[in-house]
Length: 182
Image (spheres, one colour):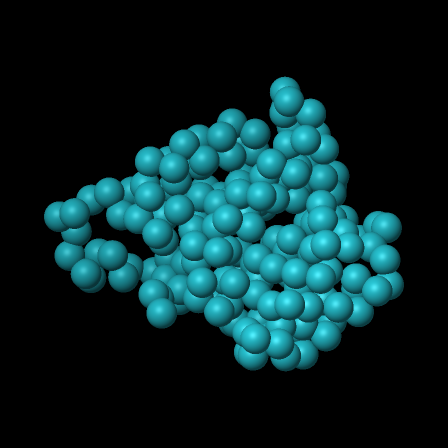
């Protein structure tokens, strides 16, 4: 899998992988899709097949998310993030509370936190600031120590909501600055 140099948010999503119990066949499909990832017509069916075989496995969701994210299909990436949230919620139970230990080391919890962060980021990119604000509030409540780095997005949100900012202000250094719109 290639990495854009400015894709820090994605690296975290990766480290949330719950690799356990992924059938070899599914892993093979994901690997194959990675090799042809720039050819949507070839890659997408492989990823859909992987999803069919392991529908709620984070590895298949992450592969699909990355495929859309790097293909600049932000709406599709956001709906994968949204799906990841509901799968993680059902795994973690209705009343989700997180302690710092879990935010740092528990794979299911980290997957949920990274899915929240991805959902907030893509909502921002798609101009849905209300959803972004609510999602970030949830992330801040669950991860007050900011173990997954969602805090940075609050600055991006603040900028998005300040229409009087000049371009210079908007382009002041921030880690997400490299993600220009396609």
